[in-house]
Length: 150
Image (cartoon, rainbow, N blue to C red):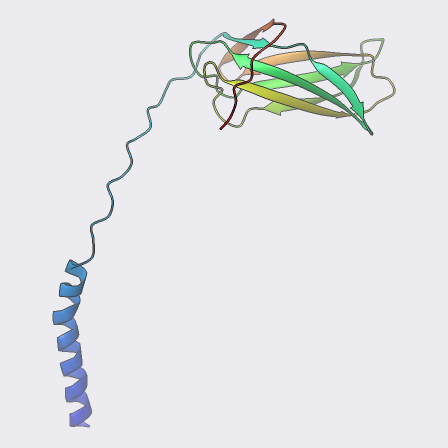
């Protein structure tokens, strides 16, 4: 038994000597990427431009597509577009909500698709633009150029 214990002790001693030398040859980690620049979001009134909504019926749904551009001087946090459908008496008949998943950057153009189940009472729709830190002043324009993504 002393022979085995001596081998184990010798192997452990050699391991303590070799391990620091092996670790010293490990390459240094890569330098971290430059931190992203944070931009403060708009507080108060933000401005956007939007195209005339294109509303069509597809199967059991009413689909509304709209192109929106942020014309504010800074990003819009928590951008929301709500579509509400009403009947001829003005009673609510359905709707949908779009929430932008990240800050809506200045000059950014998005295409929003709203899907509402068809309701026989639907007569007209309206839109409500808002964001987390205030109000949104929308302006209708005939056309918005959607940038090409590469």
